[in-house]
Image (cartoon, rainbow, N blue to C red):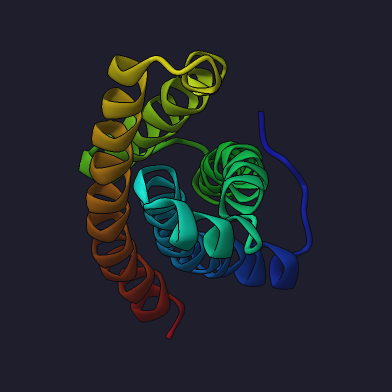
Length: 157
């Protein structure tokens, strides 16, 4: 099945996924910072804890994490859709597999929130481990995605 989309839209649509994902990579790093600050708040002495609680690191981390979950899933699906629309196939390779893995891991990490809110330390350590993996995979995706983007630009010229 061929999707009949005007050529300029097909061409420029290929830049939406990389732009969105770079923004999300930056927001992921910021969410990590907020999570580290929330952990620091939870383990701080009484006086420092009072000061840190006023910065609402927990709420900001939770809200940004929820936003990231939804936007990363949509960005992943959008990237695959644009690739399919422009090439009538998906390219089975590391970038696709790591992107799907990243999407799965962020969903698992987010699903631990109810357990962490009940004080489950194992869930907290698993969440931290998954999030370190997410940032690492996201960094690799950013580099491999730029290589793919360069190939697209070369093909356009």
